[in-house]
Image 1 (cartoon, helix red, strand yellow):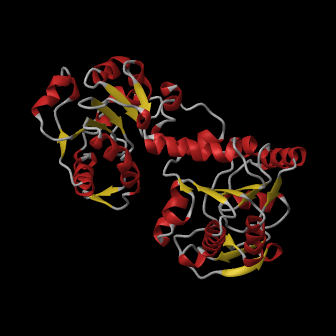
Image 2 (tube, rainbow, N blue to C red):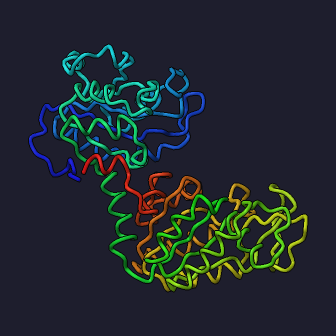
Image 3 (cartoon, rainbow, N blue to C red):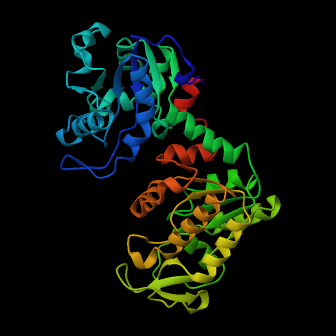
Length: 392
């Protein structure tokens, strides 16, 4: 994989730049610009090199149809303000753009093609579609790690037709994930949450051989709590998981990776209620487990104190209600404390976790925060990502 930052003689080249600008939009207003902010260094570099940038990206799931509310117009306007540079949204249909000379009539340094998912061919990984787009540029750059687990035309096919490179954000994502999966500084701990074990089982299996501790929190911890003979009341849980949990426990013994589960919890009768701390044997039939308790928090923070590397994917509780953000806040505070004294290297990923950190405005206090969801998880599972292999 070659980085565009190592390339010379880019002057006047037309760069097809694949970005993930899939930001939350409501009535044309962007509520979180994290994904836009992260790709600014790559765009600024290409501007400095006097290239003409042609951005490819998507928003939402229009399923191959034009949906006005999923236009990239608000994103092009946000980019213009942040880059202090003209950005033109090209609404011309891609099939009507016959060659790269089309772009000569525009003075702007940055052009953005309308939502690439307005075309069904994109998600079908259509090679003719990709070849047509490739003919519009001289060089292809993928700076959309968060889309790189998708075998889509603008990710997987275009690199077959052009000299292809990675951008700074993609380089950073891969470097951070390699640091916690290949270039390991032990002891290493993974804090993993979410509602379903089935979506994380392959990650847990892949990391067990490399990690010292895997801490199970969030909704998926309820399955473990119940497996060990405790009542979980009306708490969320995934069905038919006992065999999976048994497999995880057996594997942990064989690999000497310690599985850590909650020892006490915060409960309520409903999602909007107040929290009450309970021991596991005190949970009633009408209780809902919504966070980890102080005893569990102390155990986790002790483990963090004795770790050199931390991977965090998934909040500890239902943080949307501040009464159940306790566990996640305490975990974040301890990681930040150790980061500031350079005791650990921390990587955070997953939409909910990043959203939680953004709400607290503490994202910058971690070594690396990934905006990727599926790509982040699949990389941790050890899978080959189509967007990365295409660059290789």
